[in-house]
Length: 340
Image (cartoon, rainbow, N blue to C red; front, side, top):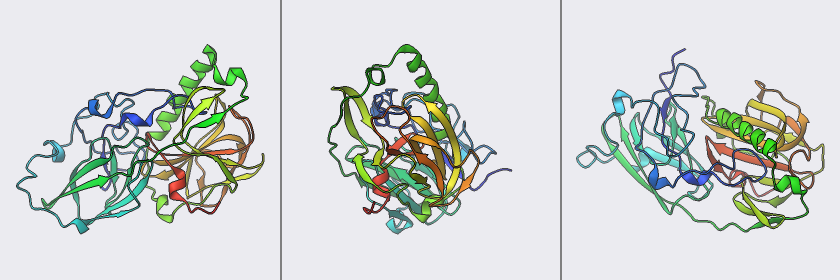
């Protein structure tokens, strides 16, 4: 079935979303600075509701886009904007605060012709809904330029709140969990590629509209964005929220969605499950002890999908909850209430 209502805008991702190994795959590939990003390119979605090639971000911030711009957006992003009529700012509404690690919900009043938002990606529905993600190292200011079908142009400059991240020190880990041997590194690379492929896809779901709840309730022992020292050595960045709860505690879907990944014994992550919440937004749960849902299952908010464990690289039972907007890692704590 041909999709005409969903516009996939493929932009290069900033380099800040990659870090050193921190307890799960996809943390160890470095990318060049955002200043090295190639020009913006836009592509229309494929016929599938989960396009993995035309709509997916490139694997590296320095890789050239693989598809040519569509006819409607072939001109440079800023071409003609000086003479274009200025759109009323009310034609863009935002829900959320621009801060490092944040996810904002956005809505347009009117049909989109094109968007220039370097370092970002936008999947705009025919109702005008889309998501904006700011990475852990997002700069102080980022500019979005929207051109509507009626020719009006809206510019929005985001003043991104900068955060500081306290170092997280974890000691007494087994040596083989910190100094990975070659077979483990090979398996880790394979797992990274598999997870990257899952996170590059998107569906038309909008489960994020219902808000998010905590998947398990307990003490938060480690937070998003913290640099880690493992046995005194650099362990990269921790990309999730660690919730200390006993083994066997239910893990509930923080929002509705589809289970798109569920595999056991991944290197470092252990048993891992991913829920697709729509438009490129996913939740990942690691260190699990088995699953209560399988790939393809549609789940409701609050439904049990797994059990807490201590598989993979961990020094105790806990749930590590991570969220991605495609390859941009965001902070789950910013999407839920303070009550745990």
